[in-house]
Image (tube, rainbow, N blue to C red):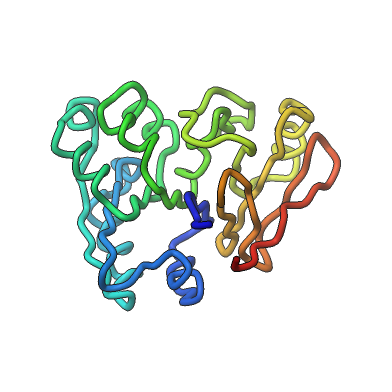
Length: 212
């Protein structure tokens, strides 16, 4: 049973060699970087940081500079995503990523890709996402289900988020070193730290990852 999706708080996940081996990120692996969410902070810089983080793995890495709706509908970007072993969604503005990818050729390709979602970008992949401007649930892109993802934020905002989300889905809050994975449709916790799971206002847990 292989891992289908990785959700991580930061690029620190690529320092975990055991995780890279589990994901088969090695010289035979074709990795596409998608820095759409970093359009306001610097797409080239974000792609370079990710490429540097992956350097030790020896994987083939290519960045696709999808910045807006026009580029998100270019067929060759969608084709490249579908051919990749993994697509890494880089950190940045979750709301910009959502509006750029939604109902686009790139978005359709992402829906069937194996993805690594990093930082704020991880919040857009579920059926619901947490609006970073105030912590209220809103619609996500629906690439995965079974959990809603959020970054660490002020305790007051997280409390508000938990009350608004209620018990309809598990809320998974990730710190920089937090990593969870989806395998055969089940969410599992990879990292030993920086992952907090609740359902409503009550603590909850994810199954711990173990190799088959």
